[in-house]
Length: 274
Image (cartoon, rainbow, N blue to C red; front, side, top):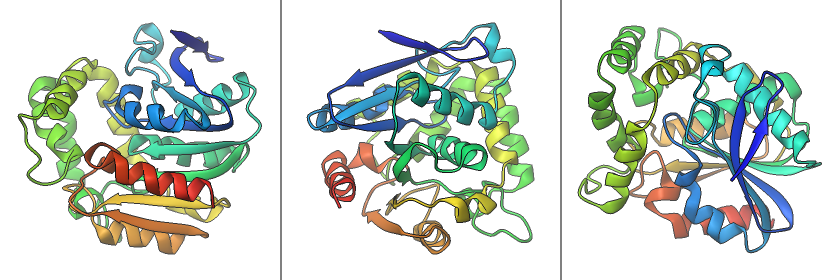
C-alpha cells in the first residue's frame, strides 16, 4: 500500500503497476480506484499505471482533513501534486464522472501542464439544468432537485446509495449481479458528510469556459444507454473540445468501462497509440 501526502497534510492512497508511459485513472463520486481494476490489469502490461483514491474516498484520508478543503479546486491541486511527487513529466489522464470534474479543475488552474492525452468518461461541465443550460445531468436536474438530493445524502445515505448505484450501469443492468452488489457495498463505505461536500462542489461548478483550454487529444467515452447522460451530452462535448473524438458504448450506462470493459479498453488503447 502506498500513500502520498499533499501540501495540506492529506494522505492519498495510490497503486502503481507496470512500466512505460504513465497512465493515471481518476474515479468518480462515491467510488474509488478499485472500480478501474480491469483497466489496471490490462494496461499495466504496457504502461506505468497509477490509480488513486480521491481525498475522502476509498483508502485515502477520511479524518479531520476532510472537514476542510473538500472541493474540486483542491482535488485538482491534489492531482497536480501527485503527478509532481511521482516524478511524471507527461501522463495520459483518464477521468470518470467527478474524476473528469477533477481534470477540469486541474486544467482551469494549471492548463495542460504534464498532460499528454485525456480520456473523459461520461461527464459534462455543468450538472444543473436552468433557463440557459438544457444539458444538465439527466437533462432535467434542477436546483430544486439538487437540494433534495443533498438532503437525502445527509439524512439517509444508505437509501441514496440504492437510488444512485443503478445510474452507474446501463438500463436494466441486473441488480443481482456480483458487480452490482460489489458497487453497492463499496458505496456504503463512504462518509456522508464528505459525499455531501463533494456533491455540492460539483453542483455549483460551471466548467464550460474550461473546455476551450483543453489543448490535447481527448477521447470522449459515453454510455449509449445511460440514465444520467445521453448522446446529446457527448456531442456537446465533442463540439466544444478541440481535437476530441466521441465514442458511444451501446447498452452501457455512466460507467462503460464497467459495463463493457473489453470494448472500453480496446478503444482507449487505440486512442493512446494513435
